[in-house]
Amino acid sequence: MRIVVTRRIPGPALEILRAAGEVWLPDEDRALSPEELRKAVGGASAVVCMLHDTIDGAVADAAGPGLRVVANVAVGYDNIDVAALAARGVAVTNTPGVLTDATADLTVGLLLTLTRRIAEGDRLLRARTPWSFHLGFMLGSGLAGKTLGIIGLGQIGQAVARRARAFGLDIVYSGRSRVPAAEAALDARFVPRDELLATADVVSLHCPLTPETRHLIDAAALAAMKPSAYLVNTTRGPVVHEAALADALERGEIAGAALDVFEHEPEVEPRLLELDNVVLTPHLGSATVETRTEMAVLAARNVAAVLSGQEPPNPVRG
Ligand code: DGY
Image (cartoon, rainbow, N blue to C red; front, side):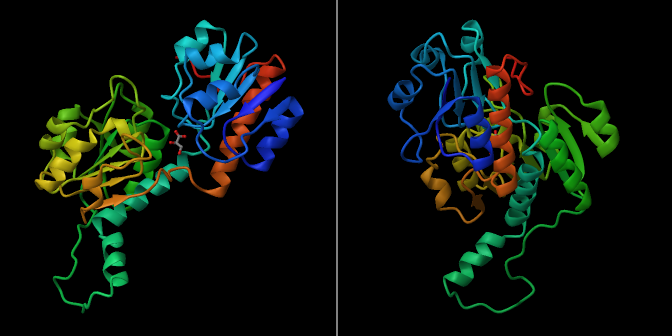
């Protein structure tokens, strides 16, 4: 059985796949173009793909009737048309759980980098700018007693909330539904989104990208935030209208933003690159050796399960 893997993956995952079928890997480790992807998947029983690979009905048709599973090496699966694949009898799987801590750690890192101006200070020194300690120098914003507004209190949102508690932040959240167990465990308060935007000192995004959440943070949402508030996005870029964010930052409508994901990834809105109160990282949420290995292994186990006629451990149901 032909297993197409669209990018290089860690050895332990490759071993699992090689035991399950004949693995095809591209010669170069780069994102395949849509044409290259359609060509590569021809005759595949399984495709192991990355979040930048768009997998729709046309890709499934290019693979042919033997395609049984598409395993995304990511928890988010907005790059996959799950309904189109289900209609063709193809299982879709993702990698929940294993990247929760890594992503929450990065979120908190970005939050601190932004509010305490860490990257800005680093740039100042590297530019060999003369400086001396004084009481008004490079002041940031403290966190204790402030309010963190989490949009989407799923696994990652909850892991961020747990960490935020240690910094003395109060937690409010909004989302599609309430999470009573997390409310009790984290002393988190469910509020309507409008109230969250108007009251939070930091807004952190953890909802999946869906048609409903695309551009959730648009010009109106940004205008509703406090001028002293910060925005952190470690979920998916298109949840934020990036041009509207650049406008809001240029006009001082909010205090700053930290982004790990981008609307037109890997492109970044050029105006954001010019702003000192913006922290940018290149989609590093899950980027630890341990986590990336676990993600790939999980994807491989999902493939192996389906190809041997079993239920995959992490099915996605559209
Ligand atoms: C995911 O798994 O969806 C993350 O964005 C990868 O870092």
